[in-house]
Length: 82
Image (cartoon, rainbow, N blue to C red; front, side, top):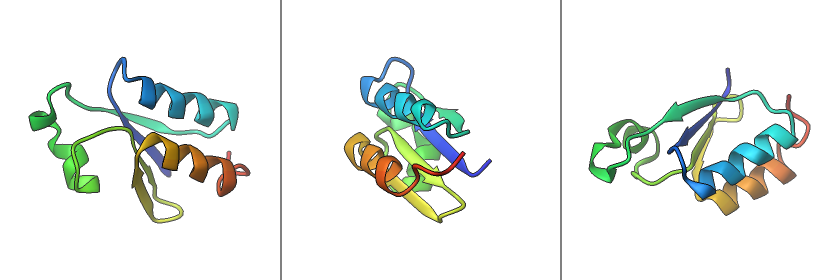
């Protein structure tokens, strides 16, 4: 799987990204992170930060954070992926 979304259960910003991925019919893997920022070692290792959402697109060699940036990327650059 080439797209992974690091997300937190109940995070509204994460859910917006999930909704867009589903709208675009993009297959993705969810990597669930800990609620406490101090415990989010995996997402920090991947992105250099502890906040979510973080999208990793291995096919395009892109890692990005912030829901608005991710939504823009998905809409403009990845609308044709499946």
